[in-house]
Image (cartoon, rainbow, N blue to C red; front, side, top):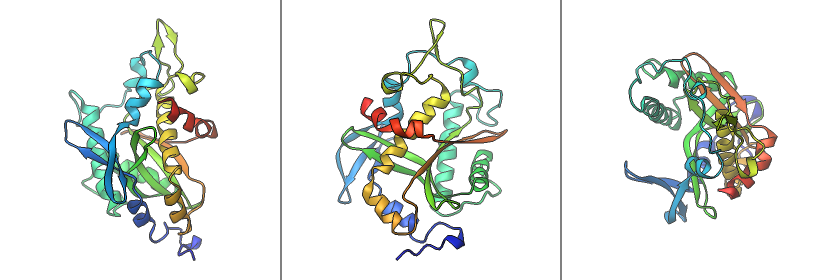
Length: 263
């Protein structure tokens, strides 16, 4: 019997525990080299897994270069200037969100980074209750591993939503990468898709979503708690000026398995 009551408008009791106990992989290694490794019967098992983003870059992105207008927007990185400022900011925000969400502290509060507060606010405004952060997923057959930035419960549909969080990226997300003066499309399964920041992130989200949806045992467990069968997905862009949520379309979900196989 489900313990979830739709009228309570909250994530079902036991959902966070189910998501945590069914994690299929773990990030292991040192600061110099970190990689995902599958978990089998409660212990680490098998070889290290390739990271999804680097695999996409090697096999799917075009050989072109994104224009500066696509990569660098007009929004300044307040407090994160200097070399690798964007990367340092992303790591710091991820760490803070992980601590907040995984301990159930999902309301913005004084002392948090601005982007942390904006992320939590954007989720709430869109009816999404975050229930897990940096939750690992993998495909051991293809030796691919990744992490769901935020796994949220959508109150209006009673479904889980895989959220890919992108902090910064205030440039033009639909400007194409170019090579020899020509706009580029992606490769292999995505040869008809323009190579843009937005499409790169959609491809990443589609693969992450597909790996989570392939966890039949996990989905069976969470459905018994009252969660809908379907799993949603969306990109969430957050910078110091605004936020934007882009749902993953059927076009991407239909191609996700083929993208993974192309890697």
